[in-house]
Image (cartoon, rainbow, N blue to C red; front, side, top):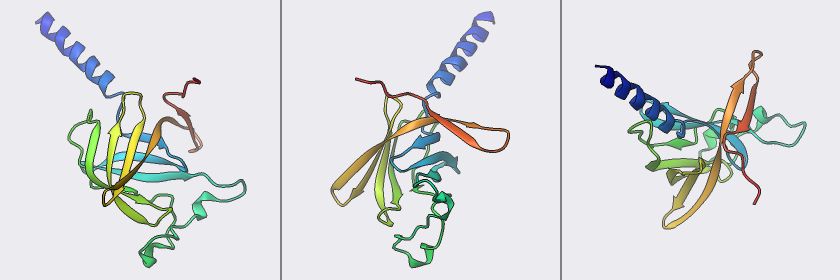
Length: 160
């Protein structure tokens, strides 16, 4: 009995170590911060923050490049940019068959996500046979008592 309890405890602590690196959480992209969550067993990735020039309100940045004219007046903050990625388990590292919305181009693309061993997320978008990718950096977010958020890199980039 004692060995069974020890084995279960070891298994749960090992599982929590594995789930430390997960696709879920805050990600630093080249122009924004995206929160990836589980939405009914599918990944959703909502824009939380957009980087803008000082004095500009990121909440007023609109989806003005959207191919759908009816959506051009919506704010980009809060927009879901990831869809169709089925989550099979918490330790899943590759997600294929989904789509990513690129607000700079106003359209969505076939996409794949790959959680790499270094903690970065390779985000690939494809149009026909031409693919391009970005690497997103994982963030540790803290919500302050006043509701503001602070974020730091989970895996700081080392100087080479």
